[in-house]
Length: 607
Image 1: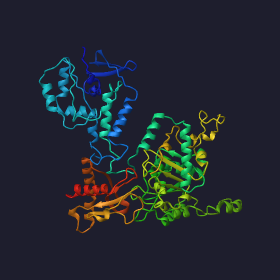
Image 2: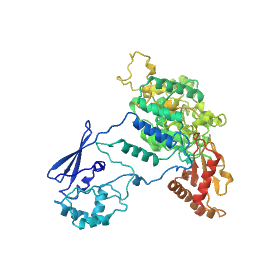
Image 3: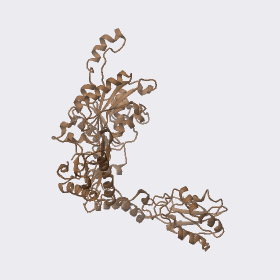
């Protein structure tokens, strides 16, 4: 029995298998594709046999046509400059509204009675939709029931769409793909329309922001070259690593560009472990003493993730108390180290944060380094003379590896005014810095730097014979791939270049800063609506304040006017507060700061 298939039919997801567990003689569909001829063959069966109808469409895309479209969108939407204030920061749609789920109900005269039996009731329909993960919003049940119960069975194969709403993004996957340039253009338009505009002057939500044309051009060039074996990129990375080491106060050093700060954490921990116990590279952790990581209670959660991922375990991460401004208390670090030693565990790694995610606090690097270096210079001398006698190390020292997670705050090294926040950074063993954050290099661009030259290669070297042959026709020191835990790596160093911040919270009624002092460009504050002002600030009052930020954030997103993060901080007994992030590009103006505060007042005045 032949069925007529339209081009629109072929673009829909084939979900007839949703009936698989409901009836035995079910209609089902299969797609096959001849890629070279761009021919799609659809087979419609009812369990006994099938007939084929071929649908052919030639797709002709001119070279560069899609790239021109992307460039046009980039210019029109100002994705490489500051976006217009008249635009929305985000055209919010619920995630389920962005998905396209079209359910085909094929009606056959021969099995119409079967269809009636399981399509007639709401409960069975609900079951079918749940089985196929189709979301139930407002289904047109009445029209379907009228259609089925009227017993006007059609021989023609009918595409009857049951959708809660018309979804926005065509997420279905078919072997034939999009059929013409217009379809792809439509997808590109929708992706841009419903994405967050990070170049918008009112985007303060994340630790990154917009980019400029230079950065975007370099990112595009990288994608076009699609390589990780380019000598040009090697020399760029080599040069930048050397310059960054000098910038942070090291005469020599080493490093690599990694896929983000979380991976840099793992590099830092791995090097510290290797430096402490080189044999663990081959033997592994089995049977060795528990090794302990120290970090502040305000540090990034990725330190715990790294401990879990690398086999140390989250329980081996000791969180050191911080002061009221979020800086690690060095005396508490010293006490924690001594306590861990008394428990028979081995301290080996301290993570000091330069620019915490929430408060933007800078841990005191000089004080931390002093604690970690205790006895370090005396150990070789004393143990050389006395270890043969006592058969053990007689000097109880710390000698911990210090790693500075400066992913957010590392950018202050470029500022003569604020670089003092990194005093002591030249004493640490390794540093992570993300130029894609404060100085707005395109995502992602993350440098991992090591003070001890050669350690990175020793620790990570695997010596794959098909890649790192010793008898190459050039200097094999250019082969830096064995320093990395990855095989393939993007040339993120290519995007690195250099390029400030805020004020005004204290002046306005109803706004209150969370911190008395502020180290970085993070601005944390509460908005107190008129109904809560001039009231007793007891625990009940603070619980009401706690509910303000989530409501205002929801209204912001629905309106699309501003994007601003919020969070509580239970360790400091702080209820929900706004956390505003400003980066160097696009640079914020006084007018934009005023707009933000005005918008919060408008959206929260009735709370």
